[in-house]
Image 1 (tube, one colour):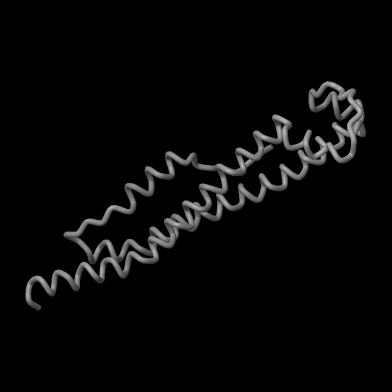
Image 2: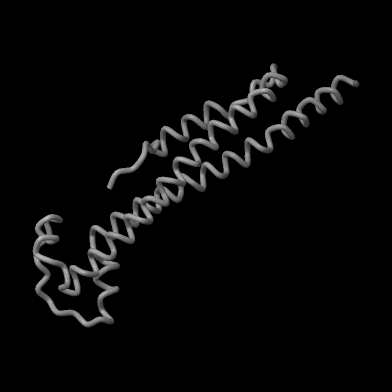
Length: 150
């Protein structure tokens, strides 16, 4: 499985923490940074969504391979290539899902997909917050005008 570069969640959170700070003494400059921030996080989101879709395709491929494995339809060459031992039990067709759902490789892949989904959701939230930034800056300016009596 080869994925494009994917930032880990902690690094992503550090980026957001740094970028989302507003210098309230330079609201005009903060307002001008909004398009760059939006572009930066939109690029991150695009990359992470791509990685999520790739993981979904890889999961489908893994599921098929595991199905072949558990149903005894996997060739000796494929078993050897994957480094899997032959599965000698005969299981009922109705029980295959139980084996697939409890397979360690499948569980690990599901965990990775869940982690990736959370990153995508987080980035979507960050982009929404960036979209609200104009209103927050405008409200801060209006508040200052009100307080100063303008």
